[in-house]
Amino acid sequence: MDAIEALFNRRSIRMYTDKEIPQEDIETILRAAMSAPSAGGSNVCHYIVVKDKNLLKEVINYHQYAHMLLKANVAIVVVADPSLEKYPGRWPLNCSAAMENILIAATALGIGSCWVGIYPVEERMNGLRKIFNIPDNLIPFAIASLGYPAEKKKPHGELDKSIIHNNKW
Image (cartoon, rainbow, N blue to C red; front, side, top):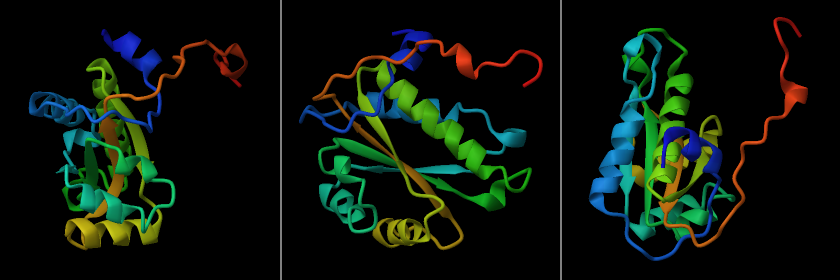
């Protein structure tokens, strides 16, 4: 699947089969995350690859909308280290770009994904710090839930001209 096709076909998939994601594909997805643009070229993101179902189940205690993690084959927790920033305050942009690359790469590989937002909700961030032993100076940003799709959704991609403005508003 090419990049444009992956962008248009990417959907939030919350139902997964039991098929295991090969380690090679997980590494490809991580490489895609690490290829995302970042302010000043500062790599502020860390990644926790989670296959332990018990750990993923614990996340539900802190995030009522994270039930898709119970069926996920793998989850990737994106964690920010703001001390590594070249331009302070830009880490959410860097982590967002990395997350989007995770979702697009997964789609290109035929893997379903869903962005589970953590930051800026303190209860969620503190819960993830506890579950995954994340140091207090780091910020749990989001979780990518991954698995082979057990549901089908229509692709995006229609051009909505009502939200496009040329030259000025």
